[in-house]
Image (cartoon, rainbow, N blue to C red; front, side):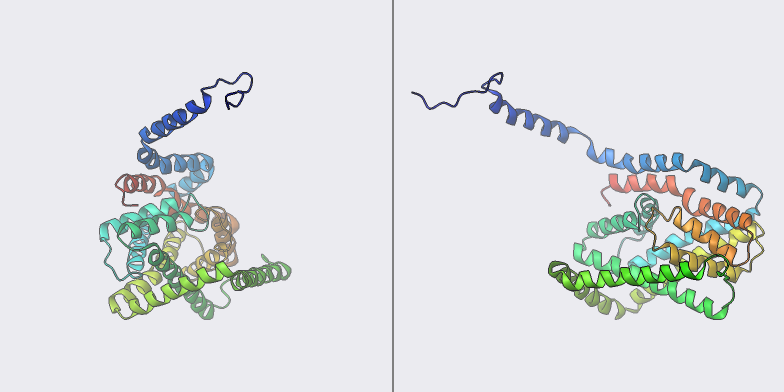
Amino acid sequence: MPDVMPCPAGQPLEQPLDQPVKRAGRWALLRRLPLRQILCLLPLLVVGYWVVRHRSLIGSGARQMFTANPYWLLTAVATTGLGWVAVSFARQGTVLERLPARRLFATQFAAGAANHLLPSGIGASAVNIRFMTGCGLPPARSSAALALYFLAEATTRVGLLVVLLLVFPRALRLGPLLPESVSGMVVAGAVVAAGALVAGVALIGPVRRIVVRFLRTAMADARSLHMRPSRALALWGGSLAFPLLQAAGLVAVALALELEVRPAHVMLAYLAATAVAAVVPSPGGIGSVDAALVIALVAAGAPVEAATSTVLAYRFITVWLPLIPGALVLGGLVRSKIV
């Protein structure tokens, strides 16, 4: 009696032999697909979807600009462009190796588009890590450079906010807008979240080892960088200039629309709003930053309608106007294997 397993009814005997052949055929078909070309078009397709979805906001922001002072609007456009230059200097200051300047600037411009596709700056972070690893930096050092940039940028932003609050302590009147019960809940939620994060890092062994290893790498790189005055100046100078230029852009839009709020108070409102909106993870801060900016400008003394018009025009210049060109640059960088 031959040792042959019976074949299930309705199933051909040669099927087990055909399955590997079919799988190989599928893999060969996948290998023939122009995956890199598809990845190049993907940012543009996603941006197109975002533009269609938020077309009412884009249209409102564009209409506000027809009645504004064009010279101040051009100033806002210039400060937006200079902001990418400042970020490029700050990114260069996070590593000892010299990064190619033109590619670094193009990467920051493209990262702005990627940042509006994923929440909490994940898109921009991924683009910058890919760029730095493509320049020869190990993944651990690329991640440490990214963390150092975030630390420097947050430190300078909060420092500017504290200075302006000390100089203009009564610039923001949040009492009528934010009841004490709500502010207490926000503070309590922040404390609970910070405690949960610290407890998770301390109690979970694998996470603790990863964090400790990462911090050692980051501290070693930070010490080496601060022994190079040019790198330290690029890091802290770029990190300081970036929020100042962003705030100056909002001031320029406010002057273009004749918003009756002092420029220093507008800058304070911008820094306070972006600090609060950073807690809410949304792609490019769409929604969270817009609402926080309107509330901050109203707290600084602006009427609700004028504050809304100013924010819409500002976000049109800084977000929607460079979005499609940034997506095109991102596709070109992917195609050229720079990121």
